[in-house]
Length: 259
Image (cartoon, rainbow, N blue to C red; front, side):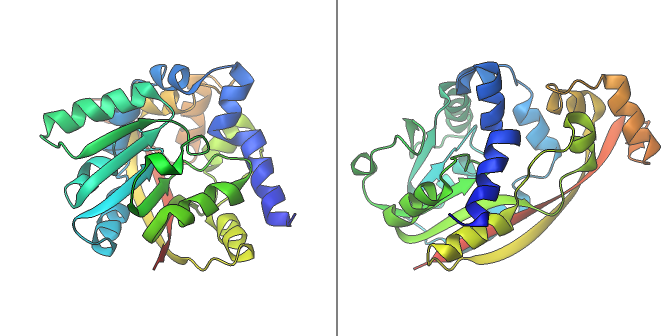
């Protein structure tokens, strides 16, 4: 076992989304049903933005595409317009219901729904897959198995989207110091597996209404006043109308392998 797999496992156990589920005894639906502002937050943070546009240039029109951890369709819905078939896989039925509602509203009919984790998904049920995508959905302790399965089922390419850059200081203030991992950890794991993935980095500068910041950090012991003061003291708070806004900068990495 390499230091990279150790680093990844520590991240999963201490600070990932899966850690929240385990700590509270929740399933995926319980988590997402308690987070109704998720799509509203996405509308502010410029995600997936340029990464979506870049992936669209790298895939062949009329392909079969599998979005692992599709959520409410940030990638699956727009990319479905370029594909013959889009499979949206997610362990949360609640999130998939939102995706289906949005797709229907846009008249998109080529999205197939698969309510499953990637670990439990049967490859023979997927049919022929040209490309796979995991965008902030790789939360398996054993990253190697998750990644190898992605590559094995992909005829033409695999895409991974994960965090680049430092953890936001607000996160450490809210939750204390925790193990973290960024795209470089995954890149080294892939290299150890003998897989060569290209890497491109993208930055997002955005503002988020303060009320949504409180929702993002709803599991913190810090009060809304604590979070507000932290942002204000660091010049990251805009006291405007109709509501206060917080300043953020996020960096994402796109890792991809094309056959």
